[in-house]
Length: 164
Image (cartoon, rainbow, N blue to C red; front, side, top):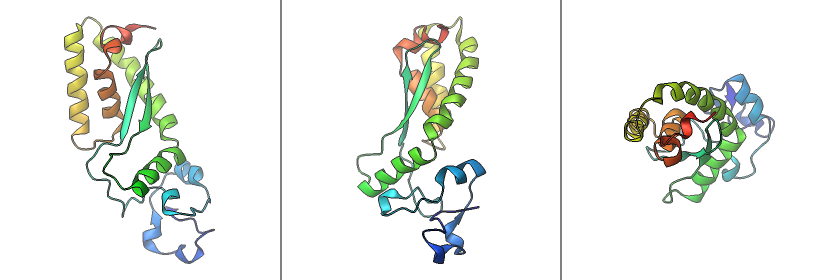
């Protein structure tokens, strides 16, 4: 358990159940004891912040050998500025780009062998179906976002995946 608002900055909330949220040790350490000074500086609260079913996590293909993806946040334009700022803060605070990147590299390494021998149309179809099947339940799942980016990259589909 972690204190959503740190007990150092908010001692009266130290034992309030809604301020205690599940967190792994790494995330707890990353968040630290820094006390937010505004709503924009808070991370996302797992119980109270409803992000809906809109995608805010995206990836782009980096055209290098071997291929890589870079994750980033792009909140929906209709979101209030406070929520958009909090999602960006959450992404930075927990180092989600650095967390997702190595997982994506491992997945893409295995995928490279699967895609060999397929033509571009079949590759695009497979990648698009993978993205759709993963994102249907969670539009911000890193694997689905990765497949979405791969499916949208002509460079990757037309052989970028095989370059080492």
